[in-house]
Image (cartoon, rainbow, N blue to C red):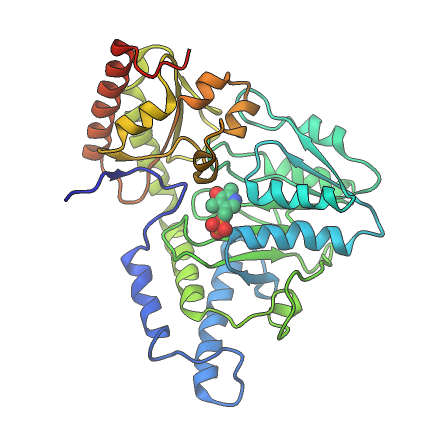
Length: 389
Ligand SMILES: *Cc1c(COP(=O)(O)O)cnc(C)c1O
């Protein structure tokens, strides 16, 4: 049985064999607990974790003590949002974020609203970019945190982090960014971009699932946040729990590899992505979602008029593995909150396809996907089947 071509790199990516290779010894031979300080098993694991922490810190221009390992970006976002809200409660109870954020930001914000905090959800423009002036307008004297994602998981749009970070710092407000889609794909620099907290994950960048990190600034300013899990006091007391050495080693290797190849791979992906789009554009009533340039190189998100979204995905399924948006919203069956925020009608929001090209995508695959997508759309339109109206 042959499987469909994988173009869902925003949902997850396979572990690169080079990453797996460096992880394997830490499952078996070097299995020690990095917190065991009384013997060589522990020392070996601790040395591996320490080396990984150094490499990850270097990748974002941070120092190693500023890296807090978590189970992924969801946990990092929860720690950042709830941890800051709890620790800064006496200073203020207002947070600012953006309507197109991932649910791992929006849901903790909703949770905080239930506890009496206030959250302003800044809108985006038709191209998915946040207007800097709208963020400035949302700031209040009791605002403690602004959270804006680096790159969107549905439409790939890259937000102006450096400008936003500078504005937050000028106002004495902490700035957090969810960089789950951005790490290893676009340059990130917590100093140049004035970032105080940064959420990372390994599995979107050819590393293993179940590992990520939160960068927490230690100086200018020193960020204070409340831990969201308590236990053995690991990770400077901010995230207790035995460190998962193989995943941490793999995470660092994945990010290091991605950064080394970032420029060349970015160009390759952008040209494949454009090649796909060029083969679809002339179908008519087909629309690119998100800013045409300021986006991740591997992202192509389109809305197709005159076809029903679920019929389209069903037709694509045997040949290409894609999704209509985020893995979460496609399971819910409601139109994407991101596409709605761009001003897309329900019909065009439902009739959307997110192509996520990745490291192992080839030109031949892109051409096969383009041909099949064309045939599927034309077939659905001819039959009038599943028209969303
Ligand atoms: C995938 C993703 C997450 C969740 O990351 P996990 O590591 O799977 O918890 C959060 N935010 C964005 C933008 C994502 O793309």
